[in-house]
Image (tube, rainbow, N blue to C red; front, top):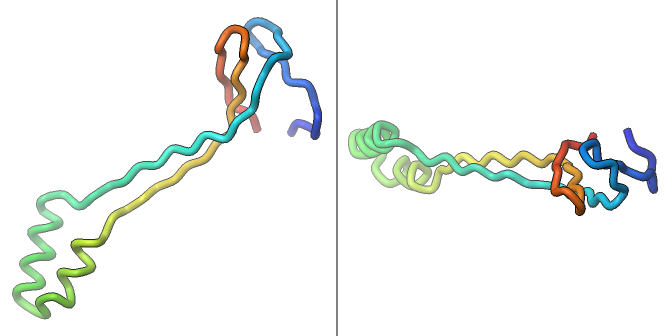
Length: 81
């Protein structure tokens, strides 16, 4: 792990002109056609709106965050721990 204030060098060009940044990737997965059909059929057969409201508002969100360094001279990117 890097110490606070440590100098980071680019592995490609050897430059000290490097910035470190946090990168966030977000993916949203909605229900497919079969999932919607299942929830609507279940709502009609059993409880109606009590079961259809969570099905309509349900989304799966996945966030991943990693730190990467970018060389300002050559544009090389690499992961930093």
